[in-house]
Figure 1 (cartoon, chains in turn brown, red, cyan, green):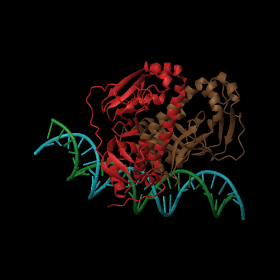
Figure 2 (cartoon, helix red, strand yellow):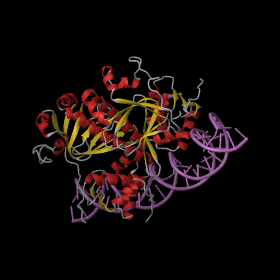
Figure 3 (cartoon, chains in turn brown, red, orange, cyan):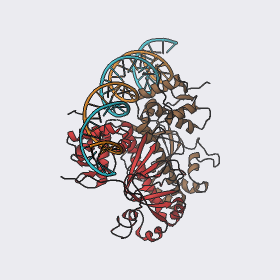
Figure 4 (cartoon, protein in one colour):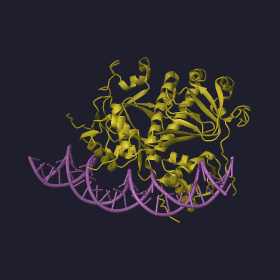
Length: 253
Length: 253
DNA sequence: CGGGGCGTTGATGAGCTTCAATGCACGTGG
DNA sequence: CCACGTGCATTGAAGCTCATCAACGCCCCG
């Protein structure tokens, strides 16, 4: 199999123009991700309440502690969400991509930071319009609750990972998660994040992540043609490892 | 200061009768915690849709993976919520007490288990009535979203704790959390859980928890008259430690 | 008095982090 | 075109934190 390395070089500060891609096949000229969240009949009205925005890679567009006066729906690109400590230690709580909500949590101040991992496009809603939206789209309330519920279930799984799993189990869990996200049965993953991001997501260091990647490759579980591209070779074994069903011992060389 | 050890011996299987305590001062004959969640005017109607239940200490009343056909509002006692792995490793994701929701997550199956830590009293709602409740109490939807949001914020803080904090920082965070929960300025905590529970909550072992408790006592941060009773002596120092503001080195003897 | 549950303490070691060096890809400028 | 610098990843060696194993103490109860 032959991969071209995935190019993720930061774009310049020039904002990306909306509507030039990511369109919905059902309702052209609208982002797929918006269609996934709201009913098609609601779209014309909704259109008045959102603002299309674009950020370059590396832009921190939500800062922990700042007033939570807005929220986003990502339409294109990837985002890391994180909490950090005064001395710089960082925990990435999740990655967001097209169709994901960011900042829906009904709180006065943001409890996390968000940074564009790649050039980003999103729809921005102001919280002041949020109450209006809620009244006019009653289904939205239920929808938000479902999103929050899904988040909570994921958060619980991640607490188990961070509190109780070994380095191998963590990385296996991560790869399985990415595999399911990709929806391709071929097992070809294009990771949008660096080793540093993965380490901060799994509560490890870059060195441990790197060593474990290498160990997996030696064991024939994965193949790494390029650092950002991983081919899953044995998803069954990885999945078993992720759940701690087997005690896979690390073998050097 | 003189503490009587907090007695937590399991009660017999005989169900606790409702209405014999935990009453609300505003609307007698109703549990405080229910009043905290619903409007007083809603209570008579609501009363028809809930079922009062009681469990002895140690009862696992929600099992991970089972159909999520009900949810609870705790009215008295304490609960541990946890996820576990096939080999027995366990991560406690939270403790619940009076006025807390358990199982509101709108999911087909429970994603966690819940076990009574002390004799428990709760109001049980069936999910089938939940949709009815939602229609008749429109404010409920918003309320549930607020609860879920608060949970999510807590979950993010806990991911930072589990992924990035040291043992001392974790225990300090735990003590601070309990201190704020107690709402007593005196700093006298009655812990309803064992060292094992604390360890599984913080992603540590009982030995490390015990050693860190002892270290805190040696450093004059706390005093431990009885294992289940802790007197906070220096909340400022504990709080700074919890946030990683200071690098408190462990000193033996 | 004996036994069990829970907690504490000590000794040892595994697993991960830290520190350090090297490699690799890519972009830039002489 | 190639030397050089930078950012990211890999690999090795040493060290530290926390887990593991083990012994003991305390308290409560039959």
